[in-house]
Image (cartoon, rainbow, N blue to C red; front, side):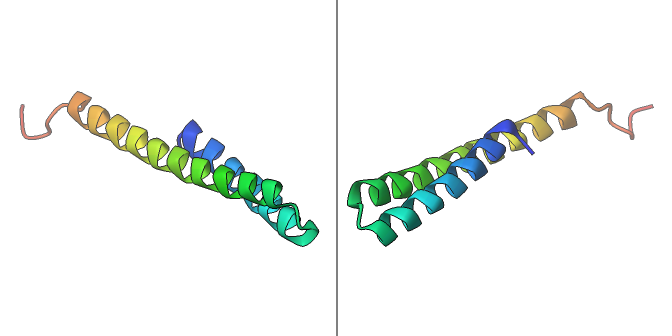
Length: 69
């Protein structure tokens, strides 16, 4: 798991809490912040997945081909 995936997960959780508290208290600004944090979390998660995929591809390129002897 990439660092961005962890950051994204934390932002998502933080956003859900803010959105819930904002909705419960009638604070539309806090509710909006929560939704924004959730979007940021999703973006970071996607970025982490992309970075992870690139790292895996680079690792595959570094491995010697087993057929070559």
